[in-house]
Length: 264
Image 1 (cartoon, rainbow, N blue to C red):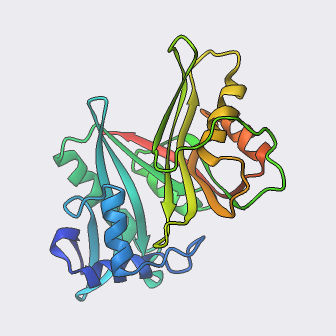
Image 2 (cartoon, rainbow, N blue to C red):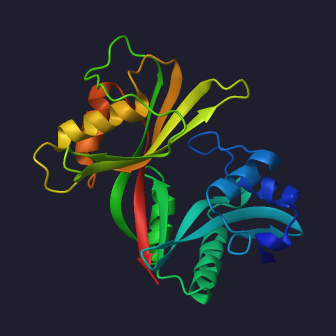
């Protein structure tokens, strides 16, 4: 008999086992360690109270990681990963996990539940649709490693190494656009990666492309550093100009997903 426990009532060993076996043979290597599991929970606001693990005969066989954020007064939950052990797939475990998740989110007064699913994972997408989720947008994960021989459109504004946010203004102080990003340094203080989370020009600007290039120059510099650059889950319909610009620079798509939402 399958039993659902909240993550807060499980051991770290059980949680990591549920995750690693749940994502065995996935579209990319999602294997984690206890340390990395905890770090991800902290960094991505995942909740041990809202996340759940499925058990059979006291063995973890599935997991759903959940987090909640308040966005302009709206309680938005997001699914940080749903996985089921290989031998239990297509046997209703995923449906049971999602039913339990939605019940918990409803109890918490969540307004909107969100998730991403690999575009080719038709079984998972079908399950989510049956649960009431709707596809809101397509998203892509882009990556660019190493240095480029020449930046396609080099900017003059130099990057502030420790900054995590940029607001671009004109000479009159009017806001033109913004970006939110994170730079990672190793134990020796060397810059090893930059992740761009958001980059948007002010709506209805006729010079939106120039604004995007300018901001990207601030975030990534002159592309001469031998580092890893990534843009996770970029909505391609809502950010088509940014997507086009990134690909012109040299970024490549390494994963395609759908972004799904469900009003609670």
